[in-house]
Amino acid sequence: MQNHARKSLRTRVIRHWQLYVFLLLPVVYFVIFRYIPLSGLQIAFRKYTPRGGIWGSEWVGIKNFLKFFRSHQFERVISNTLRISFYSLIAGFPLPILFALALNSMMNERYKKVIQLVTYAPYFISTTVLVGMLMAIMNPRTGLYATIYSSLFNQFPSDMFANVNAFPHLYVWSGVWQGLGWDSIIYIAALSSVPMELHDAAQIDGASRFQRVLYVDLPTILPTASILLILSFGSIMDVGFEKVFLMQNKINLRLSETISTYVYKVGLTSGSDYSLSTAIGLFNSVVNLVLLLSVNTITKKLSDTSLF
Image (cartoon, rainbow, N blue to C red; front, side, top):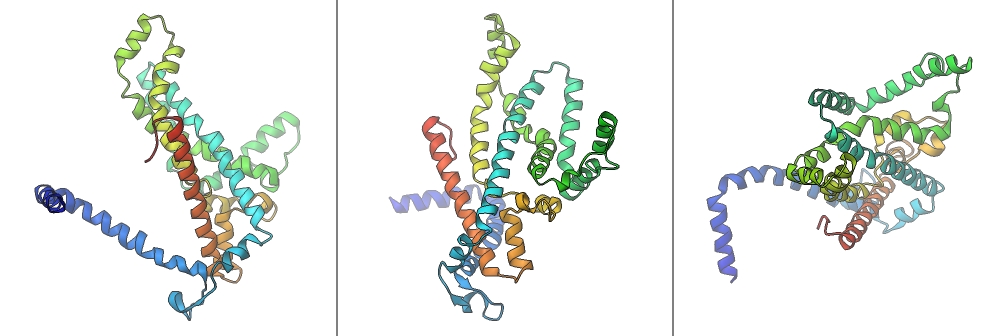
């Protein structure tokens, strides 16, 4: 049986050798840059020193993890990360679906393409430029926000970047604006596969446009939405470092210090504790993996859609 399987595999490789050659490069890439570096995770269980190296540093077990758990920063960085992640998920996940449904319902193809172009464009703005735009717009003296506020209330507004409670809102909604159009592409592609016969049959039965969206279009993209939701939970602890770091200041630090910025400061600025920063990163990845598997299991039980 095994010999037959080996012959069958050898036959497939010989027959489709061009496809396996194309596959070889990405496999080599993942082995070199994804799997081999995993050996460096042992730094999280060692008291790493550059002189001793990865293999020569003292083994300390879970000491670095306990150090993070007992740190006064633990509760703050975890709560801030989860707050921003779930806020981004609640605000940013349903809007691309609604936008795709609305765009798919438009009859005028010219306006539809213009709207797509306008909403896709912000995605290609770099994070640094986006934060710069945000600071310029929200400037309490010369920004657009100050101009509108002063014309309505005859006084200058307070500095939003100096308001600690405003940080999550600025971070999340600027991200929603930037990614709305791009995130809707996959739903628009899924909607393009809806057979027109279903819409024609629904129209004959007297269904309104809203009812056709609700009972024909929406069920079509629900499997896609479920997969994307599972993947979103798999990165719930990964709040983007660059944007948070650029928007961060000493005033809003209480709500803007996330795991990504804390790892950077621990590993590269305050004392360069490589072992602790690696332990925090490993803890972060394990939590993401557990969330991914949990949500995938729940989704699989509730529906037939799952990653595996």
